[in-house]
Image 1: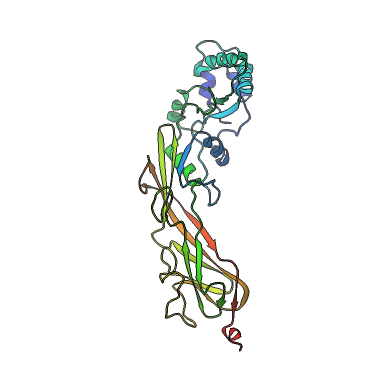
Image 2: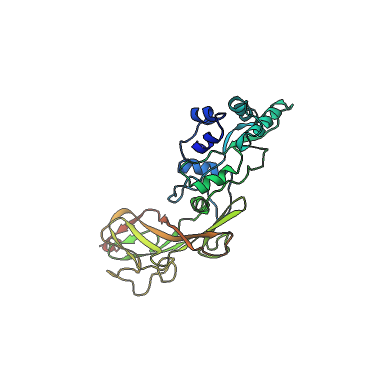
Length: 329
């Protein structure tokens, strides 16, 4: 778990120093939470709207540890007991509201029945800037919340909100259409088209996806749109040569229809020219999405870049045959 810095230990004038030096109230992750740990902790504080998924479908960004982040230390009974055990000798005026928290913990334990809730601790990342640490010190060390309530908003950078939203974008892999369908022929081209959702439920626009992350009074919007160049690229899974002079949705010809000029040895604009027979070939197509973010709830792309997201679709396996064998030669 992130600890409040050495400044905290000094300010508490020995009352809390033995506890901090011995370790914080609950087990944790050293001087800062790792990417996965940060995401888990942020998930209890951040609200997401838009094209939201479970995360993990595309390459994830590491979530930078914020200067401080609320971490749960137990339910009403467990958390209250831990606070009293470590800080029961706190006196009025003890910094960071510790005395108030001890008194609240005692009151909660005396209630019949003990009310439901969660105790949170706000350790401070010593690697954060001094200014960021000072912001964290304006908040109490502990906070108790009833079900459905969140602790006071910690100072989480907007970039952290953007990275978190990026990791939870739901961008579908393209659904592929090919011609010829279900088969291929040596020295003849297979043309490829791809489709994602026609219209994003969040943006109401074709070809764009958006997630807004909100924490307290701060929001960021992350937008994804097809890359300006090379958004659609083809891979041959089998003995063929891929061609990727594609439009944003694959071949520039009418979907599902090869051009009249297609013939033996003619490469496609977007697809594969097969070189040898095989029982199970397939075609993959990758759509590259340009991702940006900006502060607030935006109605379009933001000014700040994030890494592009690549989503790949693949056809079912199909045979590639010699033309003469099809004709009975």
